[in-house]
Structures are given as structure tokens and as C-alpha cells.
Length: 72
Ligand SMILES: [Zn+2]
Image 1 (tube, rainbow, N blue to C red):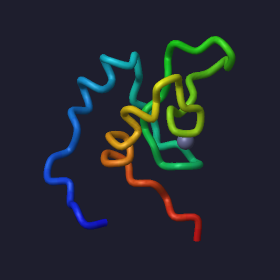
Image 2 (image 1 turned 90 degrees about the vertical axis):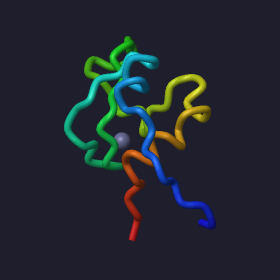
Image 3 (image 1 turned 135 degrees about the vertical axis):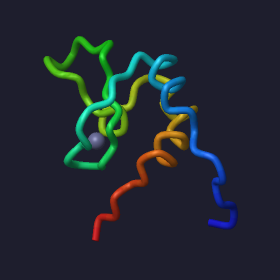
């Protein structure tokens, strides 16, 4: 952790670009972004617990907005 992020990613742009919705924090990871373009699951699922294709390309933005919970 040598570099500090000075500016948070644009949440609105992220939501629009990836067809997301903002919901209550995921119980598992704390992320508030859910996928809406899903058909495998009956309800929107958190993008971090159920990463969509190509998620690795913008996962750092999600991590910046919603820091991962520590396991212990
Ligand atoms: Zn989650």
C-alpha cells in the first residue's frame, strides 16, 4: 500500500456503464453495487460476490468505493 487514492471513482458513471444499482451494503463484503442484468439469480446480486465478466478491469474502483471487509 504505497499509493493512496486521492480521488474516488465516479460512482454514477460506474453504475451507468455496468448497468448496476445501488442497494444496501452486502452482508458478505459491504459492497453496495448490485447487478441488474442477471438471469441466473432471482434477485440482484452484489458485483463483488458474483463478479460479472470483465469485473477485474474495474474491481479496483469498487474496492476504492467500498473497502473490503477484513475477515478477522
Ligand atoms: Zn458482496
